[in-house]
Image 1 (cartoon, one colour):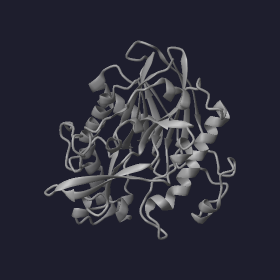
Image 2 (spheres, one colour):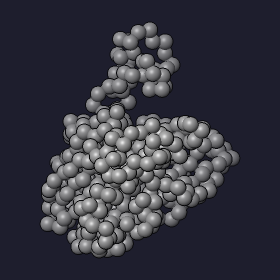
Image 3 (cartoon, rainbow, N blue to C red):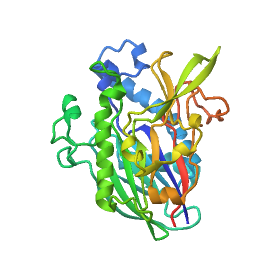
Image 4 (cartoon, helix red, strand yellow):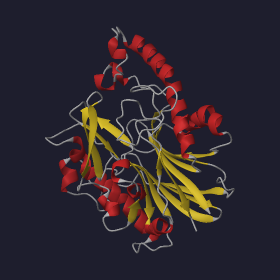
Length: 369
């Protein structure tokens, strides 16, 4: 019995406007920065027009990327709310895949921008096995103190013991596929952000991602035990905003790019992977071909890295030798592809935008029995 499972950060699937760019230049879109806008009322009108004009192409491309996964269950990040998800699925995805993801679930997490994790499911797999929702549990409320995770590194970042751990949520969703139980943990960890306190953004925020990863593991072990037994069926899916490896990019489009893989030893992924608790099945792909995001802050800081994960329990990983797919057709033309990895882009992809997302979906076919 097989299930096609995917994860995808859809990048700001919103059904509201953000006008904060009028007072905060960091949030102002570069299009509006070109114009002399004299009042907040004028800014609001132009921002609405800009967002509406850009959204149709963007969401067609997002839907194409999801359709390309051929997934029965899709774990999503950066979804505004259930109404935004319903409107997107009906207005865009339905037109591409027909009777598709009727079952949709999300709940409000802790993100200050209101972006949440979510789940879409078909009513049955491609092979006709019924997919049934059992229950959903949010862990957005748990604190460092509750799980015994507060430490000096978090205190140095200005956190308090009573603060919530997850920047968004760890959403625990139980389903059955043809009667076989499967538990999914949907996550979206703390972003790296810009440099601060003499540290680069990744290092400065690492203690929080380590705490989030430790909390996810605590939740799983409280439920399934610590013995890593082979019969346990669970997967952690989402954007962890961290990597164990990146591919540094040098050169340019004229002289040619060159690519160098670099291993990172300090990462929140070690919480899951260092002792065999889970397997990052994307690491079954070749070393240079695991990336799901292109990061750049200009010619001096460019790399490809994996931020998007499907981590399988020891039992599921042992029963499944499948190598996951990474859908990169929605990447903008500015993304440098290592030799041999180029793919045809979806129609209307731009140099920087429109694009399907800044992230790439990851998908895999799993045997559950």
